[in-house]
Image (cartoon, rainbow, N blue to C red; front, side, top):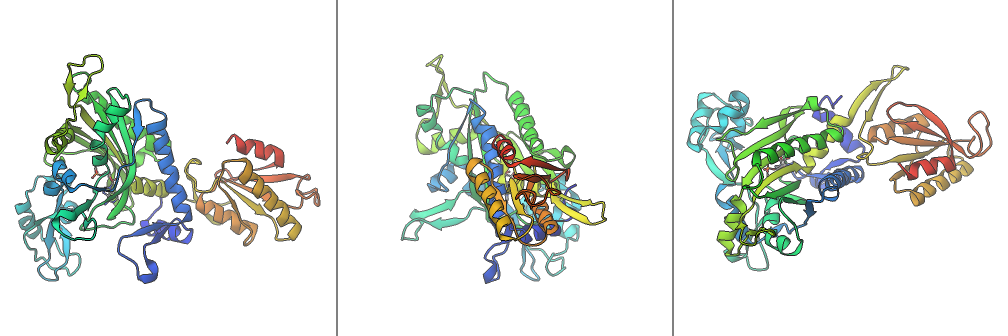
Length: 468
Ligand code: GAP
């Protein structure tokens, strides 16, 4: 059961240390979010699973980590300087600014909006009587192109020669390294490059928690192939399935996901075909990931603009030199984390009529693997529990939490709310002081989802945890 509302999730994230509002002690900075101790573990695990699936488990993939700051010519060549724009509209009454297309989407639908030209946006806003979300008036200025790239200057002189952009996508870091990779890594087509990293977009209307922010992380793949040897349609279908399956394998319900094909008018300037994977967020369907056939657009642009040859030479026929085409499966990292959070959120009625909130993360994503909970604060019991805590940390690769604050029931609730799959209780039985609780050197392990409890010897527990 996904979270019933975004507010409920935002509040849990803050209360439990997943995600905090950015710069909060200074009154915040709109739409910035900081991952707290549990959030960073969750996000790192999402990235780890992604890297494992798409880099380590595939002989045809390699990873890179390119710079965020790149030569400004990269963005001229890629088309971002002239084309990476959104239609900005001003409310003439209150001077608030919005994305004209987004204002219209709710009223007339995405498909109808994508066919509109820039000049048609303001007349349509007026015709549809779309009110300004700030002042409620219908008084729009004509739409203008707004480039979403953040600009800054490199070095001490703030002139045009020092202008650099914060990358709006990680993809270009892979294209500009294509030549270096084929010269050094003995890769044969088809092969892919993968990268995880920050991207920046000066979004006109960020919002919905971490869904749309100006600083975010992407997990992107550029999969190069020979268009004369492979059918792009087949490669497209393969990646579509692989991307979908990755989300499902980590816990997203297929009933909360759908594909959305981009119409011709909506296609990005570099794409021959694009499909989004959308997720049913609490406010409606929204893009989670995408797949685009970028053809040889980027490599040919970089060849033209840099003067460097970007062609691939067929190792079986050195006379065959060509620009490979590229398929681009792209995943929003923060959006993935958000969907895993939403999907994990579960409210359950217990037999005593209480409701427990439990984050049912896939155990591979849960920020804490196991919690050690001493039944009481008595010193000798604490010492035994701490001994076990150290043992688990030293002898296994698990992230282990030690929690002694509050009643045992409260501590179970807390671990449920952060999604810890297993909790181990150390009691007076463990110490050999109360046979009713259990035998000496045994502990109780509780399963987050089934609530089943099992009594295990400490040695047996450690062996089990080593292989889990
Ligand atoms: N290289 C292709 C590319 O950047 P995109 O659809 O613009 O394509 C890829 O972005 C993914 O990045 C999206 O599917 C989405 O998950 C994520 N994304 C895009 N803009 C975002 C934003 N402002 N905040 C958070 N995630 C964003």
